[in-house]
Image 1: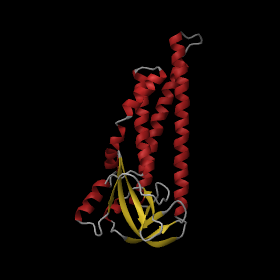
Image 2: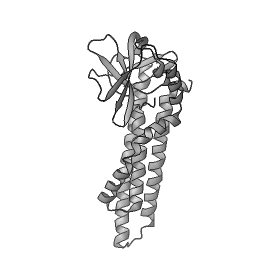
Image 3: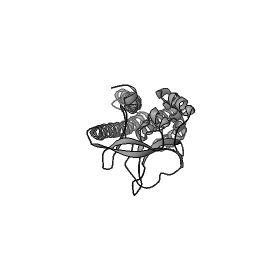
Image 4: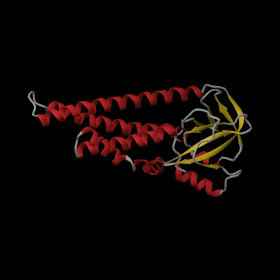
Length: 242
């Protein structure tokens, strides 16, 4: 399987690995705090141990959710490869809503209108609008076939128009579209665009430190966790760097 066909998988795997390593490192730090707590701790040591236990519980919960979501996404999307396909006229619509952009596929001529968000692929940028392509699946999840590429859904089919600013692909994209597709292809570009989602992380860290009663170290840990979760969440939603 070519790298281009597995871009969504590589993006998800990268952010899941980064998140897992971060959660694991913080869990190791908290385990070290517990191991260093004496049998008869001082009040300060006892407070640090209690915080470490709470942090471990949160970290385990987060790790469990990430593994479950990743597994569910892989299994349900893999099934679409075996589903029969039918040729339909489709349009690619780019959505800009708050801090994130996504690509949507709209089924042209279907009543009521059906549309679903997809994981980004550079080929979407140069897609004629409309164009006839095989669509696999007939339930809440659909996948698009672009030659030898699979474009998987990042969400369910819906009839309501997504919120935010919506931009349709041109009927025949110009030469600039090819350049935009090439620029948006590397995962490095993806992470740069998703970096805007890291802005709230320090404020979430402050909130957690105040709630937890910790200091700078707790704030730093909560900020890092929030940041990697934002990158992972963007990958799961199928953020569009074009």
